[in-house]
Length: 632
Image 1 (spheres, rainbow, N blue to C red):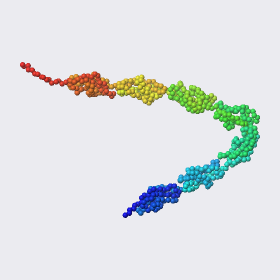
Image 2 (cartoon, one colour):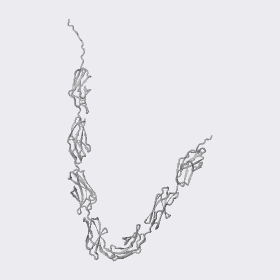
Image 3 (tube, one colour):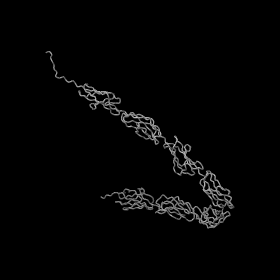
Image 4 (cartoon, one colour):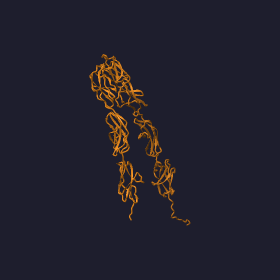
């Protein structure tokens, strides 16, 4: 009989992930199958396809996205088991770019967009008014359309990959590329009656203003749509005048040049100076002016007019407090079209500065017998002297500091209490300026240690305790006059290891970096002594079968030990002052000693010398008894 079985499970199922619009399946051939059934996305009730025996490839066409696949073999006996799941991906064209934005700047258009989340993406193609003008590789999402022709444009983005191109994006905002600036034409340049040059020219499109050139150098400018001005050069030499338009992106080509020579200007003011040594003003002075035709001076600070004064003046005060500035004066000739001014005379000036206080300052509180004042100035402008003050009183006057150089001044006679130290900057012209203060004081010596106590209740140690004191960094412990320990602040006890029965006086002295404080009142401490040797030891003689040992009481003994011939014989509790030796051999003499027992500190001392004692022997039996008869 021929037996048949269900086909085995299909092995080696692989699904493709890199083909456009289809997924290709491959698997290993099996024995005894009549064909294979293919299932997709877990729908095992209905296969998507059936192939014949020995076919190991199936292509799932017109499908995109991620899908799962299983394959099972079948024969006359039925279906085999499902294969392991394989995941395949059918590629498709990319999605649509979003948020397409175009921005024009100086003739270039920058286009940005947001990439779609679908993949893969190979490149982004840029369309200007429907025509592709460029492409960038993934993941770039920016494109610069350089120098397109002048006009208005919109942009779209098309995503592309190996499967083709996706849908065009929505249209971007519209941008306009303006044409480049053209050359200024129609320029005229005519000397004016007031020693200037009257200029005019034709306007051009897209300008933000115009530059005026003299011999190729920009000497003035005007705003947009202004096509005339009066230019007054700084001298009366011949000048080739040209005009060029400008905007935020470029300067246009120069116009044709016109050669012109202006009329003569007033001469410059001589010996002009601006002061720096007044606290409430800047005083300007100059040589009296005698040129003909000039009636006024124009005074300026940093090119801003302050005043117009008669030309008979030879000084001017700018009241107030002013930083370093450029002060200027021009001789002014008033003409019908405007003012004709001389060449500029200028000088730097300012009000004398009030010096600022230190940028950092510290008064010490940890120096022995002195207070150190440390300070630094970040600015020394106007500083002539540095004052050191204590509680408002000047202690010293120092010379000026250097910038950011630390200085130290020492108060060698500080007050006992904390004081306010102050460092002030002073100007010889404007007086005292800024200050900075800090509390400081000399570090105190250590105080007196109190409540010193020494123990009496230990055998070989005496514990010394005390109460700490302010300003101490540590404590010196003395036994008599001998230093036995030094401890840090925070430790207020000392253990002295000594012999039993010792008695000592202890003192404690606090110390710190500034020296030692006073020595404390002495405290006496002691240790418990060992019991002494008993006295009055006696041993009986002649008692029947026993020896009674007696002694005098020792106050510190808690028990007694009795020795016979140097061998421990027995003990007796404290307060019992006799011991009966019941083991003594009659007629034998023994030496007895008593040790003062023990207390919490150990064994006492044996009594000396040994005391002799013995027990009486029994009376021997009478022998050789003889009786006499006196009757004879």
